[in-house]
Image 1 (cartoon, rainbow, N blue to C red):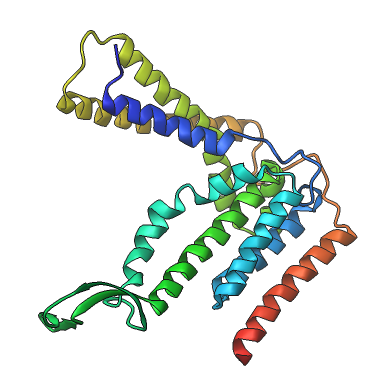
Image 2 (cartoon, rainbow, N blue to C red; image 1 turned 45 degrees about the vertical axis):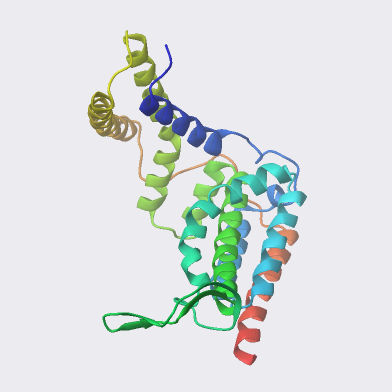
Length: 288
């Protein structure tokens, strides 16, 4: 019996999330980023994220993206895997947001491609639109800048997660004075997302094994609503039990690790280079 549409969609979604989060363990590879101290790595990536946020030049943004690709290659991350992971959702989400900025209605400027010509300007209440619809050079630059900014930010986040062991990353964030509640929530979310994905798959399999005929769409929606409610209730009870178990074993609210961090010369050089890049971009924008 073929699985119904809703069940198949949920199953494919859970598998996509699982593969995206748990597919590869690249933090143990002998690469450039893997060899950096986690504290230095967090500082470097934070400076590069600030560079991405403050940068106003399209070529600088494109150069920063090429830098992330070079770092991925130096860290022995499969290039196809890295690029696909970054660009899989950007056209779907960021592209839809950036699409209106292409047109002269939103971003006036020099037309490079006229799509539609109207008989007269269009008025809508207090707003008046031009008599043609065109893609402008300024709009194309704005959309490209937005997409590249998101691509660089996502690339940096992916590089940090892929090349750093999870507990080392949490310890580095703790040492850098990130609030403990943020670290704890992030750690528990990452640790138990796999468990809840497995629970959802088990629910789908149990439902499929008890069906004798395809159910109506209305029944599917009702089942999905009830199962989501059951999953939320189960997650709440599990969080309470896990908290009590942690407290009974001496949990004090601070993550601890057995491995000691060592800040080496290449860590200092990496932080210095990231700081120079950030400072140079700020100075360049002020001058020009």
